Length: 86
Image 1 (cartoon, one colour):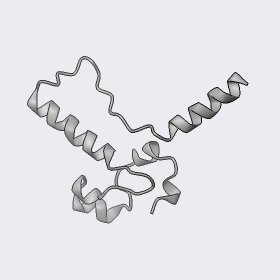
Image 2: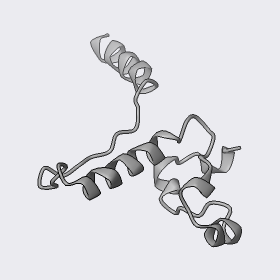
Image 3: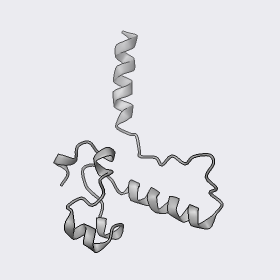
């Protein structure tokens, strides 16, 4: 019974999980250029809400956006449900 309760709680809590950006402890986050990259990437990752893709034009150059529907190959790792994204 405890295993079933634990499984149910784990499944329910997994719906509230947000994407987080891991920063290696050796990275100097006081450096302004590094900090701006971290903020940029965190903002990019946070735009993946539900089944909608972010506006790639804000993050990728125009040539890549014309050439590919999804210019970022890491999207397939962020969201495994890419075939259902609108």
